[in-house]
Image 1 (cartoon, rainbow, N blue to C red):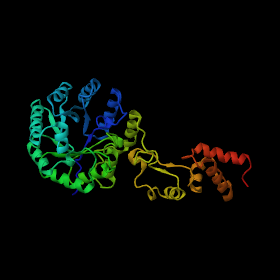
Image 2 (cartoon, rainbow, N blue to C red):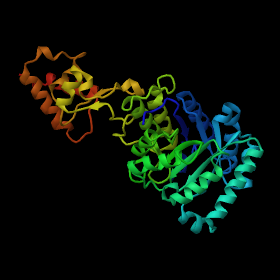
Image 3 (spheres, rainbow, N blue to C red):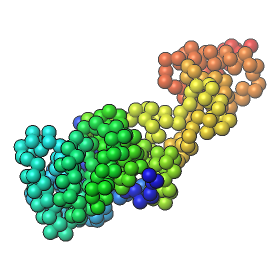
Image 4 (cartoon, rainbow, N blue to C red):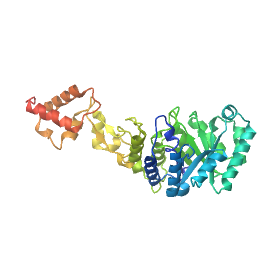
Length: 380
């Protein structure tokens, strides 16, 4: 199925992202992150005003700033919906489980009662002029017959139905089939809220979009419960550069490094150095063969320019480096042309010997080593 450029982003960094153990965003941090997300091109900011007084104030502030681009997530209960109304929300995301495991073990009710309660709360929210989205918790483990029955009861009353892969157990092929099933049994928009327990969140979200899903639900950097959520940056860049989605005017991909760095700073969750696209090493090159190729033509070892996501290329010296990297790093200050090849080789050996156990060596350290060698008349 061909991709369409109307794909929307539901950013749950401030809600599900903050549910990652140890993460707490304060009031001002949430406002900053929301501003950056909206500027990037996010369509919906997800918050949960019932969590605390602070979250209530955040919701109220963000609604004043961004209106119906802010959605207040609520349990399918009047008391939660009333809190959202008092916060000024114009849009809510209600949720209820769809798997028998959750319905019987968590809610302690039956299937029909779950439908009745959900419809009643959707109608209640709509009676207060709220736009209503609905998330089917654990939908990926629900009986398909019941999922269809549930959808038939609510799909004409809601704007978006989110398929929630609550325990991250989907793989791409079942994702495609499930999205197709929901699309063909409802008239509302279809969204995907995918967790990353098996490291499949990005792949599953992309496959769901290819199958016709309209809305991406994820977080910047992929933070969230347990192993986290689908990383917005990975999904969006893949859609643009791998699936050739026309989104130039919609998403400011060059903001991604800054946004993810801000999430890292505020959350205290340090990104893996090899995190795709936004990690410190995402565009770093140490191996001599790679450095030689990149210096001749960056596309030899980079599919896209670092600046496309707001990143920078780094040439670093390490155990696997070669002469090209050394010449590139020190060439502006120290001309290696005046030295014979054996001298350059000697400096490389000395650098590797002294710094083999370090992850990388700064430009200043390298220059210092070479100048020190020269002073000691090691050059020959």
